[in-house]
Image (cartoon, rainbow, N blue to C red):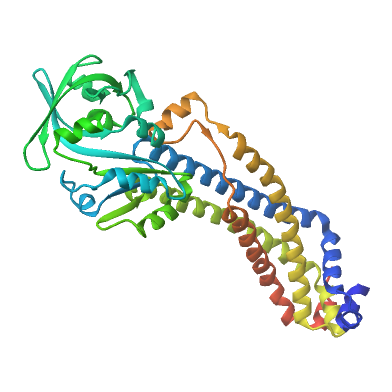
Length: 423
């Protein structure tokens, strides 16, 4: 009480000693249980939000990496007209030179050119429509993991080799060692024909790919469809999938017209939309948790102001301005926030950093269930400045508002009435 009186009179300020924070700190421990309960609520909120956001961020990055690593890559370079209308003549020209230039760009790990066309695939008396993918096997291995999904047989090696989707192979009634014939329309409008030996059957778990895709050597598909040193898509793998947006802008600056670079979120909008929906849902849940805890802080400071009515009345009576009393309560709230945020971060950081290195194994059954959603068997957290700073910042604002609401009563406090209040 003596310290408060000194603060009220302003002699502490003239002496250069910050007595108001010192008094506020001592006031917290007049009811230590309440202080620790309030700080514990803040700590729980900070811990939960930091951990959950880091877990979400890590899951998103792994989902994106898994989805893009299967077939689409982190970036794709295409003819602008091919994006709008997938016609076989809308190609990327002078591919060999362009691939060499791309591989010299900072942040580019590998590039895989592809020819994409549609054809009628037949075996015996059965025929089905399918997409034909002309690929360079070595470049594909460095860029994506599509050919890791070959379930039977082997990868493409010879000029007449082909791998087909599991469902398509079943529909055609063939397996490894069978022969297929492809008939399509070439660049100049003529008939494109290919006879290929099935050396492998792939299984991705994605029906559209397993049911309607054939992969064959790039040179053979080019020759059949009347293409020279051309391709429809250049698949680019960046050093980190999180750097792909920056790399897209970098490539767009020097790519000749009409070529454009397309980031993974343009190529696979369903993945981006799913992540955005999940992120919004997460923010909604975090907001609800923060609001519940902030209401508990409001209740704590309502009790504080009620119990200390006589004290505040005495401070008013000896000349302390209402604004300084309110400021003292706000400083108390800030100290409670510091305790809670420090405890929450101290608990969250070691767990998040450990899981960032070692991950959390989902188990075989769960992993097989979520494989089609590109979720890996082992999830890793990923710490970001947003995850680290958002929860403490929200709780700081919330705590200050929670303390201010009941403190406004102090401005209307009459010293005589307050001094008569029962403790």
